[in-house]
Length: 482
Image (cartoon, rainbow, N blue to C red):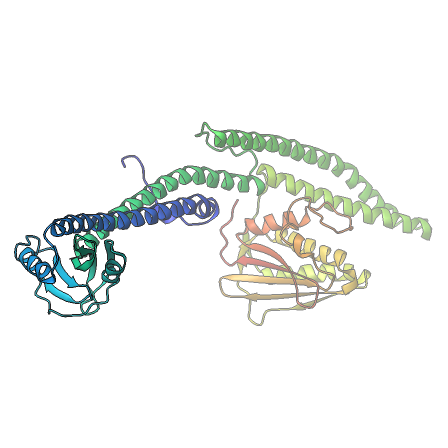
C-alpha cells in the first residue's frame, strides 16, 4: 500500500501488541477457525448428500422399472438384470451389481466374480427392511473411498427377490471437498493476514507516539525540565501530549524559581558566615577566654564551617543547573591528590574515633587530565558521608586500581549500608532517604555531576559483609562535558 511503510523489525510482540495479540487477534483467529470448521463440515455433508441422493434416485427409478417386469420366477429377475447391465450407460463412473436374496453377487457391470459373498451393511439392511439403504466407507483391498446404494428388488406381491446395488468412487467428490476447504482456508488466512496487518499498522500508530511520549517523560524525570513533545496528534494522544508539555513547562518554571531562590539565599548566607567564621577563629585564640567560652566558640566555628560547606554545595548545584559550572583541567596525579585528601581527612576522623585505611594500586596509576580541586571536593564529600552515616563501623577503607583505560577508586565504610529501594535515588538532588542525619541532600548529586563532567561514573552499592561501597571511575583520557 502506497504511503504505508511497516518496519517489521520493530513489531516485537510485547506490551500493547502482546495484549492485542492475546485478546482481539486470538478471538478473531478462534472465530475464523470455528467458521472454517463449520464450513468444512457443511461442504462434506452437502457433497456426500448430493452423491447419495443421486444414487438413491437412480436406484429407485431402476427398481420401479424392474418391478413392472418381474412377475414370478427368479429366472426372469436374472434375465432382466443381465439385459439391464448390458445396456448400462454409466459403467465408466458407476458399478452396477445385482445380488440374490442371500446377499451373494449374481451380476456386476465390472465383471466381478459371480457368487461372491458380501457383508456390506447397505445390502443387509435392504434385504431385511425392504427399503433403500446407503453405505459409505473404504474398499478393504484397495483402500479406495466408496459409496454404495442398495435397493431391494421385489415381486409384485412384495417379496424381496434380490438387491440392485450402485457403487461409486468418491475420489472426485473428495477432491472437490478438498479444493473447497483449501480455498476456504486460503480465504481465512487472507482475512487473518489482513486483520493482522491492519492491526499492526493501527497499533504502530499508537505505540510510536506512546514510545515518543515515554522517552520524553523519562527525560523530564531525569531532570530535562521544559522539553516539549512535537504536537502531531489531534486525538486523545494529542491531549496527553499537551498535558505532558504543560507539566514539563510548569516544572521547568518551578525548578528555575527554586534554583534562583537557592542561589540568592546561598549568596546572602555566604557573607555573614564568612564573618562568623573569621571572628570565631580570631576569638578562639584570645588568651583571656575561659575554657567554657572557648568550648562555645569551637562549637560556633564548627557549625559555621558546616554551614559554609553546605552553602558552597548549594552554589555549585545552582551553577550546574544554569550551566555556569566550569572545570579547570590539567594533567594531574590522581593517586597523589587522593593520598593528600586521605592525609588531610585522617585527623578529622581520628577526632570521631574512626580510622581510614588506604590500599594503593600495585602498579603506578597513569596521569589523567582533570580538575584537582573538584576531585578533592568529591573525595572530601564521600569521606564526610562515610564518617557521618557509618560511625559505628569505626573505619573507612580506600583502594585504587586501573585497567589501563580507567582509574578506579573504591571507598568503603562499615556502617549499616543503604536500603535496597533507596540505592537508585541516593544521588538525586535533595534526596535524603530514611536517614536522620543532618545535611542538604545534594552533596552526592554534586559529586556525581563532577565525575560525569570528567567523563566518568560514580556508583554506590552495598558491600559484602555490610557497609556501603562507593566506586569512582575516571577515564585516563576523559572527554569533558564542559
